[in-house]
Length: 153
Image (cartoon, rainbow, N blue to C red):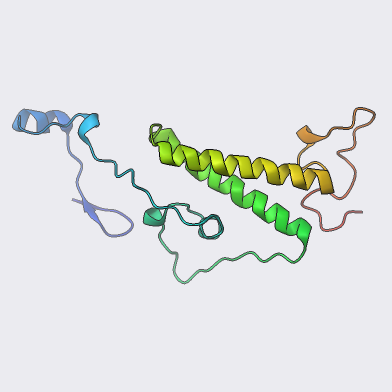
């Protein structure tokens, strides 16, 4: 008998012993219900909670995290971080549920929005990463401020 971190009871079973004891259970992976009807938080809530999936979220004590932004540049960076987080969480889900078309559609929609926001940010404030530096005449990635700087030198 075992208990997980939420105090839910579970047991480990030796599948071979279980198959030998009973022949009336189909234990093949195709017949296991993985509950693919996942409900997602909206992007901002998922980002602030650290989990895009409502049924997987477990609140830590009374912790509430909310990032506040006060200028257009930081707001755009916040959105980019939020979309990146959502993509990574959906990426992990799709690794284990590759045929879930609704989640794949959500992934592609968020990916497109992320690309739009990155393009918007880079056209106004410069490249987000050194890989996106576009100047062929000189290495301009070293010019301040970098995306995470508040003003530069």
